[in-house]
Image 1: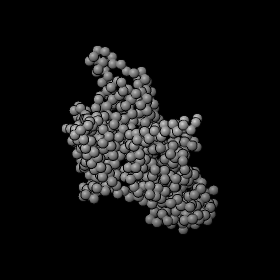
Image 2: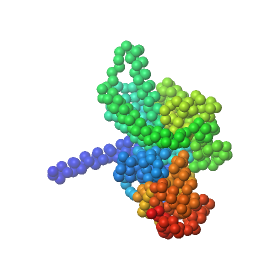
Image 3: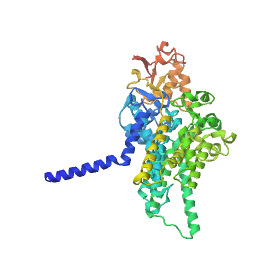
Image 4: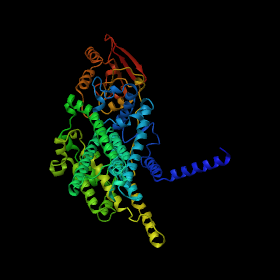
Length: 580
């Protein structure tokens, strides 16, 4: 190739690169990342040393992602039998696993890497939520401003700030993205209805794949999503049958789409059942892990909760302090989707690019989602409603926090609001009329900015407890004392240093084996406790004296080991006992 040919090729590459850089989806992805960094700040200011909200569930979830990667890399068949809660099996299924993030766990080792990985996922989760809702709104016919509003409201609704410590609850972007892909694959939108010439089987297959991935992030969010997909499939089949009956002619279905849906639905069901099996096993082994109506009532929000913001909200938090004080469990009952979003959604009922029947359908679905999110509050006892699902819908008795269903309310309100912000004219023409359209479009930036303002956080970012020297290179099976409370979650995080088997762990229930080992260890070290621990398979006991005051293990360090046949060694700020 000569010099002239190289110049031509260079200009072509530059032209393609420029078109790619200016493409809507490139800009949307970049905007999503920038907004995520800004609106989750200061998460990335010190990603190795701090963590959002508190050191409770975030440290648990940092361990979960790390364990998923470790298991996939070393022994995938033992995935569900984690290194915690020794000697119990299926311990990875004691809570929502975030298994879908396991590939991130393949990179990096130890507690510091686990924290950095968690913080990066925390930011990226918000970005994906924006992209997913933006894509869904665009697919159903919204303009860029309306889609941006749907994206920012879904990613940064005030209620989500209360869930800053629950990555599995924030991980909802796959829901909106899967729905967008499925709608695109079936050639369907709110604005134009079904258009057979827009059918794309590949997009439908991709939608099912994303939906399956979403379920692997946890059943608390994934199970209702699975039921929504089942209802959409039933609705689609019913519509097909009705059209066939009315026209007396079977509507054509592209073979590729039929195969994509069939294969996708089977794969989705397979992944869902494969994920569910370990949880059913856990409930069978530990009936205390089953959620009760009483537990659900404890987390069911009153109606005022849907208009109350959490303290982490910069705009509404201080203003709603008195309202929060009246809530029984504010962390799960402050469910404000956004004042601006609610206002625009109401406006969208009357002025919208969507057809009236679609507006009414969106509003009706939003009301149903609110009724379900209210739990036992709706109807006085949740029946008919959430409790009905708990009693009769398979798997629903594993979800104890109904308020989190407000994510569906937020998504539906976002689509209603997007219709109100969608300018009907496809392109502004020349002259005064065109200028009015362009001005109207620029004016739509204001409501998007106001929704963003409601999403500004004041979430605390707390220091992560450093791994004690006594736990580095720990040989298991081990018991770390004291063994109670939130410190168990820290031990789980520290155990990412080599993943030794440990008795420690914290879930919504306590396995009987852990209860017995804890009870025996309160007299450690003495002959009875040493014998019991040896029989249980424990070979190492680590005491962290700095955490012992005020616990049953407060004076363990002062107890003698003479004649017990065990070793004792001071390591850093801890004491390591070897039960030979």
